[in-house]
Image (cartoon, rainbow, N blue to C red; front, side, top):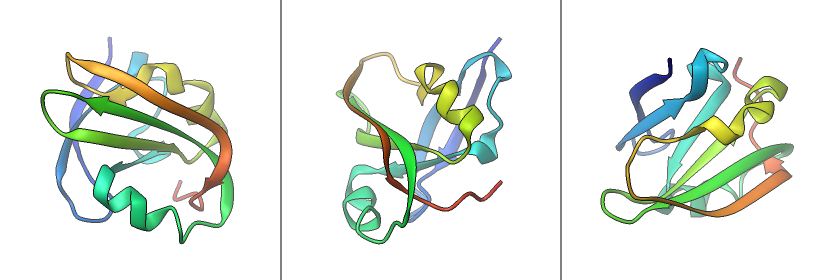
Length: 102
């Protein structure tokens, strides 16, 4: 089973449908940004963490999922926006990321 829920963009609170595979990652272990907010937020970040960027071509545009913990990073293949028409456009392991909130 998977954890499918609506997450808000960490900055503007725009709702983003999310999918966390097999309940292996807690919701607090990832942070999600819409494309507009990620362009601003990535300039303020300080610690190296992994990010995954995906485009939902039918629904929300660009979404960035940031792994805040090693567990979330290990499970990132199953942690993505919960949409049908998804295309991954970039995976950036160990890029500058956000401090852990867990």
